[in-house]
Image 1 (cartoon, rainbow, N blue to C red):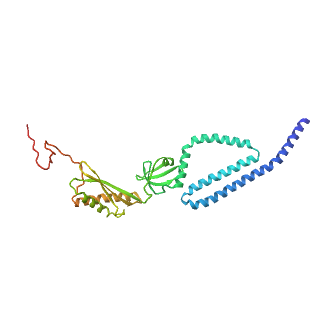
Image 2: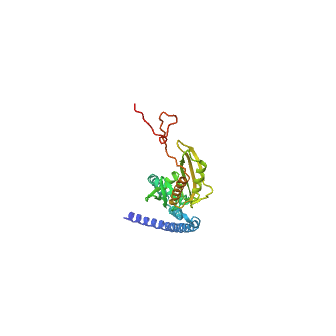
Image 3: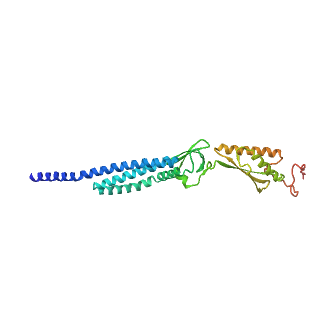
Length: 296
């Protein structure tokens, strides 16, 4: 019986000594946690105010970076607190477990992480903004929202398409709104009998009358080919561009104007022609004379 009592007394005395030694460490560890939390919060607030003024259009990305920074500071405080308490073995187990979990999570969330990082870059670099006309992965329309995982596009046919951000950075995309202008290119041809100088002069004159044309003295006109039945040309000019209807309206007006003016100037827009050869060199036009077929 005395041995049991002595063991209990020894155990209680040991606990007493350990408690006296452990309480200051516990207090210090809690103090470290509190200070690191306050430090992380202060740094986050200061950083948001400072970078929020610089990157006004990227507040979502700024908040994300600041939140990650705050978590890292708090984690550092937690590891330091465990070190003060003498629980180094727990830190080792936590880090080892985190490594294994990180590997598993890395495979499981690889695409999500890639899309999130691409979304961060999109919000920082801003290659396009909400409302811009773009063509991404074959989808043409306006940017609805740039998210952290996907970018939303409202297409010209009325659908909302969500494109993964990683896909945007893995291939080329077009922003039609960057320069607030867009080039219209009209390709057609005129018949062999038309005067080419007149064709060029007339086409340029009609396009210069379009209100939305930019730099009307710099309209490009080039004959590009002597075709099988026509002289082909390209007519190129810039128009102000804020939305797709600006481009389509200018293109539509140019075609109507050129067609009407060509009719007034007796210029023929070429179309495929076939020649029938009735054993006459060079063929014969069926409208020139009556074709007579002799019965054998």
